[in-house]
Length: 310
Image (cartoon, rainbow, N blue to C red):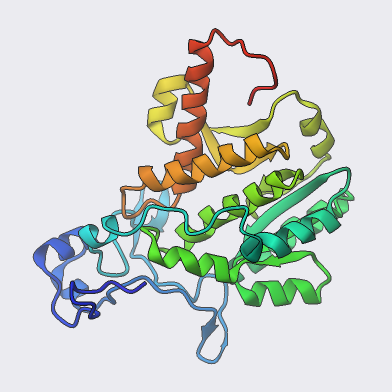
């Protein structure tokens, strides 16, 4: 998955003026930067502290406080190369070899046909554990984690927390346009959820940064909708179109083949809408666009058609 020249070699030259400009830094900085983003779980022979194993962005002081500078890259960006990468989902939810273990775990963990799901990598281990412990306080022992790295899976398994090891399926995204680790990790979770939905399991998917403070699962399950999604204000196009966007980090989905396909269509749309090198939320773009399209289709049909609506 490394950026290569047309003959297959990893670049050993100086970055071009366009590559420097696309990276958002001065030439002297670009010439010291690596050619591709990296992510590691081991730092100086020990487990990396959260965030330590990633390339660091430049920080800047703003009226709202210090933040990472949005328009810069910690590695040399090659726009044409990224845009030439595959925009296909590298595996489908029905691939038993990929998601068989995750679906089997969901079936064992489910209560009343439902699971509470979060995801994370080694960087997010403290957030993941915090999420699970709060879920357990609410007696949500049907909680499981989609572990994007083997280290997190091993740690959770040692704690007797249900975990599905998706490290191999995450690696398959290296051949796509999603070159940043976080881009792939955010997207892979939805394909795994789609596999569970296709198996007839209801899923409440939550970002690991969510903290559940009161029981919500039964309440959400009782609402007559196939898919319930938290509102958001980004991206702008769906907001202009239907007045709201969808947050890809909190939704309740009923386990049907139709909902599974809808979630997968959001993943596909996210890969199509991916066009900004700094965009880490391609999954939210995809979900927001397909939900906006579905709402417009329902309006065109007069809101009729029976069945439940998201």
